[in-house]
Length: 251
Image 1 (spheres, rainbow, N blue to C red):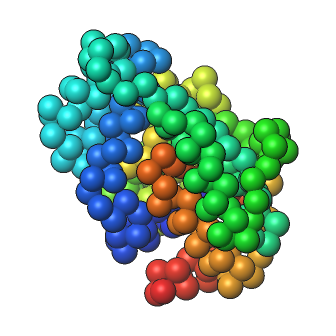
Image 2 (cartoon, rainbow, N blue to C red):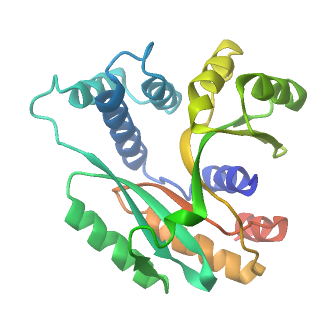
């Protein structure tokens, strides 16, 4: 599972993900809107919103943008666009399974765009439930290992109810049941650890192994999907080997 964190790190270094700052702010703002809509506009009581705001601040998103997004979510901004969360399923290259998390103001446009991206990569959209059974929702946190040693992170995770704590070298990942999200988030906050990634993620119950070239083909398909404005996250079931990650970093 630690391959996801390593791949995210590589993309950040290469600038492959969210190459334009506007795209970063758009995704962050939509996450804030959805978080505020679901749990209210107070970050002290809405943990998903707190993490979204902290991430926005770490990306130097202007305070006015953050406050505007919160007001859109709570309904204070009556002229705000109405967004909805949408998860689409599909098959990528080489038998890979994808779950595509979107936030959109136009469901039909998003479905059309995602379908086209799948087709462009040699995959295809799937009916609801055809792929979803291969994944389970988990609490997920990732942060630089420089912020907390693995031993301390492991102890923190166990005490907070995590299922697994993974040493990814430069980064540490914590996985846990959905209901442990608040507890783990609180523990990290108390330890002054700012996650680079956090949220409820869809984790493959069983990963498949393919060759290096095939893995790179799958990664390219994911990048096509991530380039879409409405796509927030893409989850997959391909195990990313060290060889494939090295090839991606040197590409």
